[in-house]
Amino acid sequence: MAKTFHLEIIATDRVFYQGECEHLVITAIDGLLGIMAGHEPLVTALPDGELKYMVDGKWHYAAISEGFIQVMPDNSVILADTCELPEEIDIKRAEEDRQRAQEKLRQKQSIQEYYQTQAALNRAMNRLKISQKHFK
Image 1 (tube, rainbow, N blue to C red):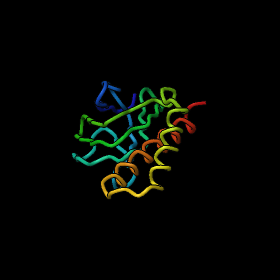
Image 2: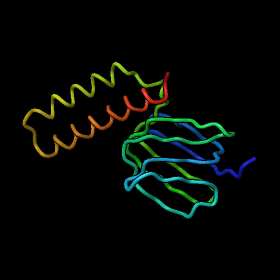
Image 3: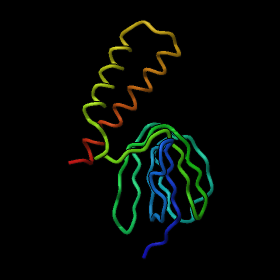
Image 4: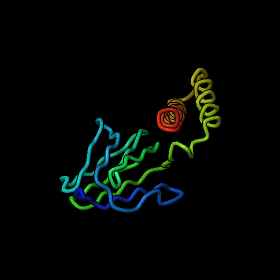
């Protein structure tokens, strides 16, 4: 069996995953980050993106929203606003969120409102991408 490390993925509403993991690939602020057992310690911010992790030789995928990851040689902890499996994503709701955010971006807004709307659009687009890519 491959060398493993302990992985915890914690969303604001639930513990998404807790257990051993062989490999983790996640979108970090400065690009894709691959993690295996023995990785150098690091802490970094996470944008909306795709999370994939290998357990018992099988890849698992999820849509993850903003958060942080702490990596140690024998464990990693991800704290995120949300984390969803592709089959858990409500495609209709994500599409409505995308349309609502795009419409709001066309309206005059304050800088703060613009950034909040852009973040909502990014979340909706990420959810749609992950559900279409991995849920058949």
